[in-house]
Length: 163
Image (cartoon, rainbow, N blue to C red; front, side):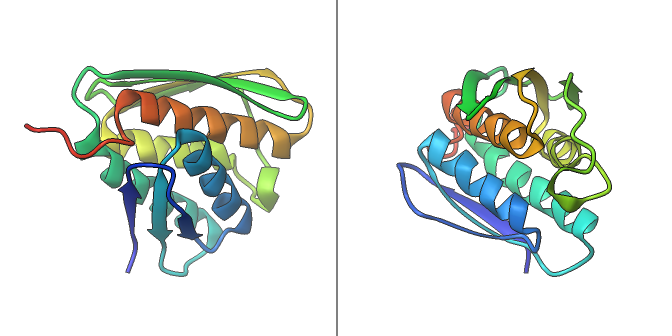
């Protein structure tokens, strides 16, 4: 069964997507955001696993972020530096200046694919700016760390909002 659960506070993460680099990146996302993350995806082809992971995380964060909430963060990973800004707008959109096609051994842009599914499922507008970063692994890490902090600042690390 596929799904994700977020726990408030810097808990442990247990991530199993079938894509090792994505497992690592989601662990970084949770650590940087200061929350626990349990996420498991049913085995499939790698692109489908990335899609399922983005959808599962989107479902987990959607009830935890109030409509109109904003979150922003800039994070480093070695020589890479990325900024992520999110808004719970109800108008899913991803705007990014980073093309990381081929990173993580996939033929597609893992970050764009994951962020697209997350955005669609949670109703988020997501802006990604890769400020520095030649190494694609470090660029991905910086983006996911910044995303984790932005999600936490928008409210995903707290309990579900009353609504």
